[in-house]
Image (tube, rainbow, N blue to C red; front, side, top):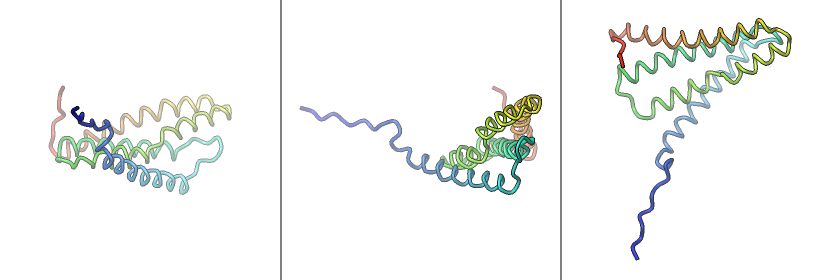
Amino acid sequence: MEERARRPLPWQGEWPVIGAVAVGGAIGAAARYGVGLLWPTAGAAFPWTTLLVNVVGCALMGVLMVLITEVWAAHRLLRPFLGTGILGGFTTFSTYTVDIQRLLAAGRLTLALAYLAGTLLAALAAVALAGSATRTLFGLRRRTA
């Protein structure tokens, strides 16, 4: 009887990517934690630190994506390490939702709604503006689909 060739599982061979994401995530999460220690948000105050972390992280993601897709031929582990890992660990949309719940629990509905919408708009604008600025800096034109 013939031995059937063993098919590798879909995730086998991806250990370097998993490792890059894990190491990058640890770095990004530690950086976010450090920022939170430096600029803590008190009680029912507006969560400026979380907003700043998310907007800066999204802006850096916009720069990164232009650099690795339009400027450089990046190593296959660069995007998982920097994008998913470091910037994914640094940005904190889970804390964003906890901040919204905290504001609602404190009876600050208007502030919670402003934070809810403002963070989303600021994060999207940060990605778009940073990507556009990076393209301009490198003399690139936006690709059309």
